[in-house]
Image (cartoon, rainbow, N blue to C red; front, side, top):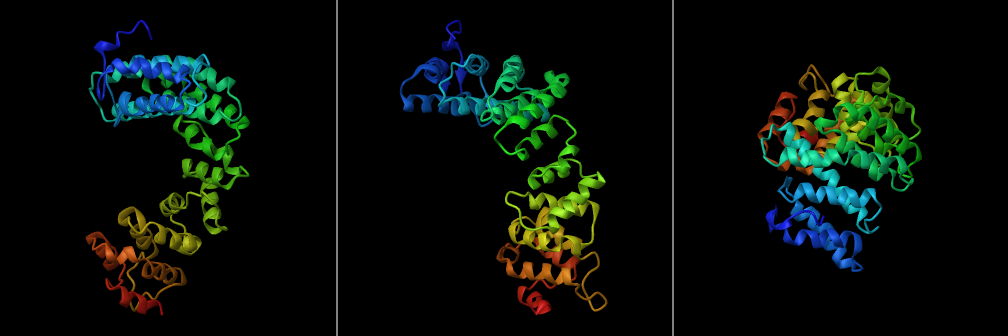
Length: 325
């Protein structure tokens, strides 16, 4: 840190002359308020609304060293790791958008240089910290210069998953982002882990059955029901198979039309309702859910009206209520 001329560098709020003091506080400050301010400096000044200025690369290198050498104050570790993870995700977003920002390759280089240190942190992490460092490793490994290290990173994430105190479900998306095959988790005892694995492998017959079994089973806390319902629509089971989950989906996604209640309603009514197409039990249940949900009728959305019309349903709430009573 002492070899960096911070006076010629900038962060989002101006010259980076205050950055060395904050970085020092992450390691040494006896003041809780100073440590909190130092973590806040990373999140609001070094990384600001997805952008990083010239103080970013050296700050990234400093905080990575603090983690690698065990010098960061315990109060600041989670904030530092989160800052590095978020920075990696932001840089990946900029890359995906084709950004030509001058600082982008410099920030990416600083993050990539830290990969060996983060790999070691994952390998040596205690069970309580394994998930924290696995997330960081997964985010950094997605940067293009580390494309050939993703298989290695996925293997390390798996070992972290096996010893972590966090539920296995938390690791599924990290592994999937790294391109790992997670079909072995379709048999996991944790239903949420099974759900997330099934969403990764939606074209696999076993995964599709897992999705249907979960949607047809009892409620499960933290189950990604909305994503499961939309996945089920892709492989088009009968509406009866997902009727209870579809009704809950309508009630909980009433602010979204196209990819929300509208998608489920169109699926439930492949043919417009009319004299030749009376309501089935699953259609009646879904229509009851629509009638119960205020937002469906108060949005004034043109797409909402089109959904109802295409399905042969009245645009008036009370007329719909009359159909199910």
